[in-house]
Amino acid sequence: MDNRYMKILGIVLTILFSTVASVHASISMTLDRDLVDFRTMESGQTQTVADQGVYHNELTCSSTNNRTWYIKANMIRPLTSGANTIASENLKWMVVDVINGKGIVFNNRNIANPFSFAKGLVYTSDPADNTGTQVKLRFRYILAIPKNQTAGNYYGSVRWTMTEVL
Image 1 (tube, rainbow, N blue to C red):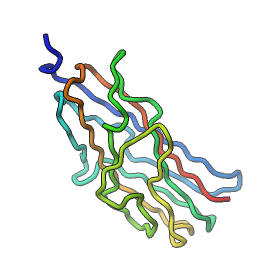
Image 2 (tube, one colour):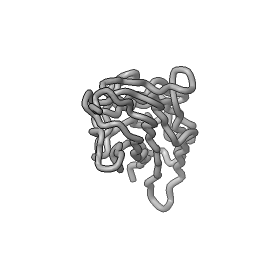
Image 3 (cartoon, rainbow, N blue to C red):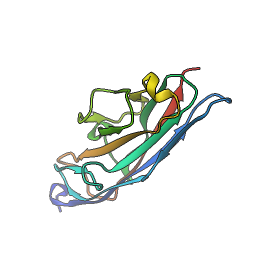
Image 4 (cartoon, rainbow, N blue to C red):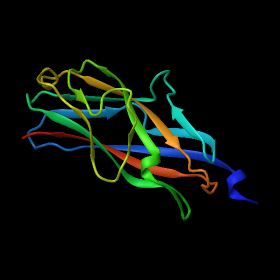
């Protein structure tokens, strides 16, 4: 059977996160949902995941150190099914809302940004964010399946990292 007519089943993205800071730092980062499931998709289809209405998950960050901090994202494992891979640029993130934050969203809100294996900037804090404010970033995810992609269950991993200027 020609793979162009097969459905791609169960594309799942696992989102991992980590925090990087100095020993004396008082920073924190939590993610409310660490799994993105695009469900059944077909070759050539693009789908957006926003299971909470306009967003899918929420990243909460805070720091009491009065220093600028950054949120970065990178793919650490591509979407794969056996020997088949979907290119990282086919998976995109979008910040759709910032709660309590005055900082800068990379490339503005509601703009889709592709994941890559290099750490990419997502958010830079404002001085008002650096005094213990719980800044919440709400994300939506978009996946485009190439037209000739082989059917399968695809899994990948993304890492969110919070760093602070020392």
